[in-house]
Length: 84
Image (cartoon, rainbow, N blue to C red):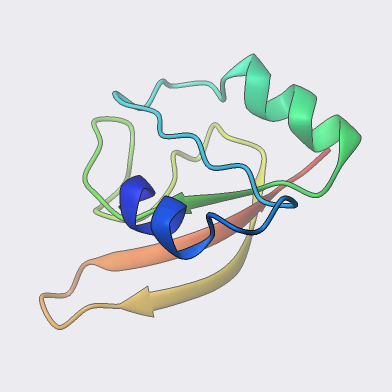
């Protein structure tokens, strides 16, 4: 997914895309630092050990859900805003 976002957003200098895997229990400091400087969003779309289900962020991350889409297979793709 990050590669498809990079292709579609490649000309937008206001967008920075960084993939993280595996998903840690606590939010990486680089994301928190970015959120302190400007609005920052994260996209969850796959399974992770810390996630409740596919596409749902770990509850330990300081996030506010912005939008969520349910896929035909019952999993989710969710965009969250990082709380600063």
